[in-house]
Length: 238
Image 1: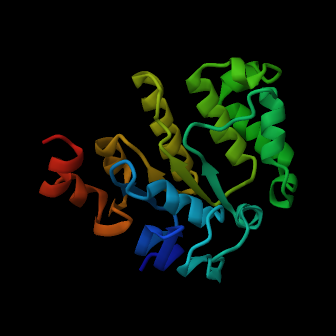
Image 2: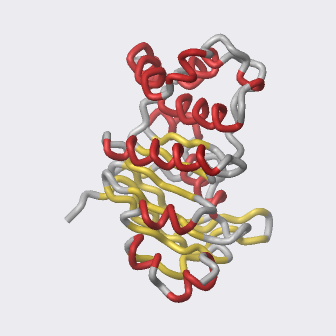
């Protein structure tokens, strides 16, 4: 049986009186790519933000590496080994490429291996190495996404959550981003993937969950959901 790196049980999140997540339960096995599928407003980003500690759940538990981290502040969650590549990249546009990477190593976990982590990022993304002094806001969308991934890797995460990594990118760059996700996973990083390109993400995923109106309504392997009639009609236009 595959070891669970992250386990979520009975998770409820409310914004005021409105439920964003209800009774959510997912398992993220060590070394897996787990995909979360759902329409806009289904609660996918809310789930990621709750795992990261940005939102505080009303009920339920989040357990990472056997430790209950429910309600922890986001900096403690990050320092434990959970990284996030946020929707819209959210780089520091006024800082240089190198300065953005330095920010990613701010917490103790990142500082401990900063030099090696930066070398790894620059080897993975040669364009960033070439432009390490360039102001990040002047780069293309694809280059900024590479920087967002690189900044996350500076924290030396064991689990990386990608929130819509292909959003707004040209098709050729999208394929490159998915290739990077596969490579990181092959190197041992566990992945949670929230992605509008459902067909590709389910192809990559070892397991997947369908989130509708804040509730998990379907789960299975990526291949099973890819061929599920309801998923094909709702998300694949088939």
